[in-house]
Length: 318
Image 1 (cartoon, helix red, strand yellow):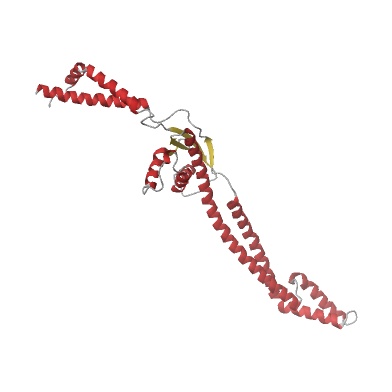
Image 2 (cartoon, one colour):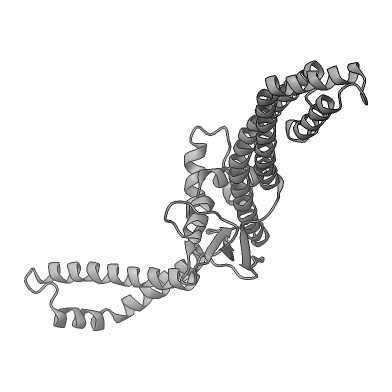
C-alpha cells in the first residue's frame, strides 16, 4: 500500500484509463443534467427586499436595526406567516400532522432569511416555488413586522391610558366632593369666595358700625355682622377648600394631557419601516443551480472511478 497513492502511479493510471474516465464523466454530466431538471428538483424563485427601521423606541442597548431583526424573526411574525400562507407553496404541510410545527419552522428557516447589511438595513430573502408567492411573502413579512410592532406599542400605550384614566376618575371624584362641600358651606354661611368677599365685608361692617342706624336698617346691619362673623369662623376652612379645589383642577389638567397623549399614541396607525428595495416576482429561478450540480456530479463520479481503478490496478499487481 506504500505506493497506492503515488503521484506517478495515479498519472499513469489516468492516462491508461482516459477513455474510461471520459465515459464516466460524460455519463455523470448527463445524469446530473437530467436529475437536476424540474422533473426531479422543483425550481425555486427568490424575492428580496431591504428595509430601514423607523419610529422605534429605545430598547436596551440594541440598535434600531437589531431591534427590527429581533421582531421580524420572532415567533409572533412566523405564526402570522404560517396562517397567511398555510398549505400553499413551500408551506404545504397539513395541520393534522403531529409534527406540523416542527416541519413548518424548518421549512421557514430554510427558505426565509433575514440579515443586517453593512449599511444598517435589514435584507429579506424569500425562496418559493411560485415567483409571485415569493414576492407576496416578502411583502407580507414586512406587513406583519409593522403590525407586530404596532400591536406591541399599542398594548403598552393602552396600559398607560388605563392608568391615567383611573387617576383622572379619582381626581374628578375628588373635585365633585370638594364642590359639594364648597356649595354646602356657601349655602350655610354665605361665604362665596374668601379672597373676593373679605375686603368688601370688612368695609361694609366698619361702615355699618360708623354710620349706625342712620343710613342702614338694623336688618342690613345684622346681615353684615353675621356674614362678617361667618368669614371669621369659617373663612380659613373655606379658603382651604378653595385651595384644594384649585389644586385638584391643576392635577386634572396635567393628568388629562398625559391621558390624551397616550390615547393618541394608542389610536395612531403608522409603519415602523422604510422600504428602500421593494420585492418583485423573479423571472429566473434561483434554485437549483444546475451547472454546479452537474460539475459536482462529474467530479464526484470521476474521483470515485479513480479510486475504483486504483484498487483494481493494485490487486492486479498483487
